Image (cartoon, rainbow, N blue to C red; front, side, top):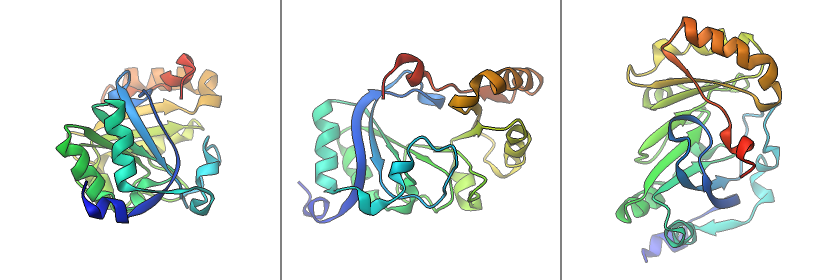
Length: 205
């Protein structure tokens, strides 16, 4: 085991093997590592307990690697919190050596460090994404809490790379209200797709 991996640690709120419920990789088995620490502060965040990094135990990178390898997962999703606050390059490289695809879910508010295979960028009004991260996004997923969020999301499209996949996703508590609006919008503007939190329908993490 790489000695560096045992000497570097990060706060982890939770980790688990499940099915990815959102976006491009919906339906895929994935090992999630949810890092603690976030200063974006979304009012509708469903993991507010992740915000304070000091509230969560730190684990060495070699421990994180073992979680994923022992699960036999071929996909690892780094999420948070705001995972781009940290440099996980060594973990990403180690997972790649074991044939694991590594994705990140980020607000884009920080530079994205490391050779991730797939960058899912979900912008937040409370701390806007930076230009550098917008260009790196493979997937742009806008959570629609208020109807005005749809047009707000549209303002970022010009700053994304042309191959970026665009998703509109209703915030879970507003699904009944906003999903019909999203459906109508995607039918009119088919460069967008719809993402749903299917893991919540399946009642899994």
